[in-house]
Image (cartoon, rainbow, N blue to C red; front, top):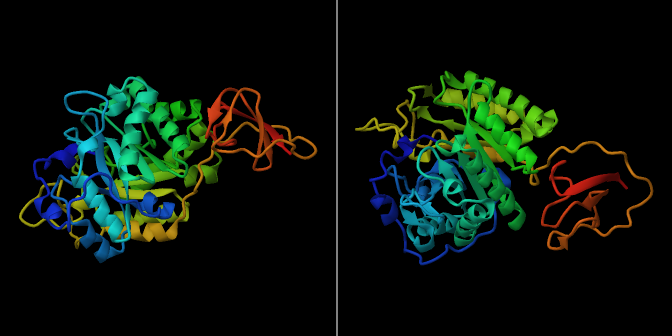
Length: 401
């Protein structure tokens, strides 16, 4: 997402925070996870920048239950600890924790987005996969998260080592936090995504990582309305099949749209009619995610044309957010992501191996049964589900039994 999102970073959300009942210390109280539909539909919200609206007002006006809070970055001065916007340490945060508590008290929940356009990302500064995952685990633990978004953009996007750290960390978090909803968001082009995006897909495939969805942002790239965005999504569908090895239905169910409401940074214009075009495509093809940047912008411009705080197109407040609510009720994303594996010859007889246990440690040559297939471990593993890690993953599929 473009950093016009940060243009108003000096606008601390005095009005927004002032609506809080109280300021919590430490982690916000956990809530029961929403269905994945809501995390897949959660629109982006900067909770302390770009003149944020009161989320409770938005929820009550639209029926929305989930927000995608942005962004987690490395500290501006360097280091491998998570911060909000590079300045506010997660470890000592109470401001965003208070926002999350209020949303949960109103029956909702949040996902947190890491990365975005500009700034320094943890994948660049943490040095390796384990350290990157540990930094993000602090965010998950602090806020009791059930969902996380990896928004992989510049300047990290073209850094092979940093992307490897991010995707490796995402896979680790997925394994260590059962049920965690993980989305990966990347730039979009008319071809679906660019060269670096296809390299990202290849890296994910090579480590056996399959998020709940890969989403593209079809804006700031010469797009002209909803039809051009649909064309890009259809191109991405082909890339997911060819690079991830998925069949058509699987590719659609693990594909996502992340749009920009109103005037983009490149002066493209996206109206509610364009959102309707993409929404119709997404729901008719069973896409796994439909989100947009941002709720901060989901207002008519009054007295300002600042792209960070209003849309610059004719609308009523929260018109674009209502698409998120509709999508949450229309398309149930897959609960468990899958990776297509090379077909094997089915085995005969019945399985005598014990059923796979997510909490158990397995070592090389251990054999388990899962989903009526027998699997053999190639090395030490814990929490990696057989049948989801692909041909490069830890489990060898010995066939049906």
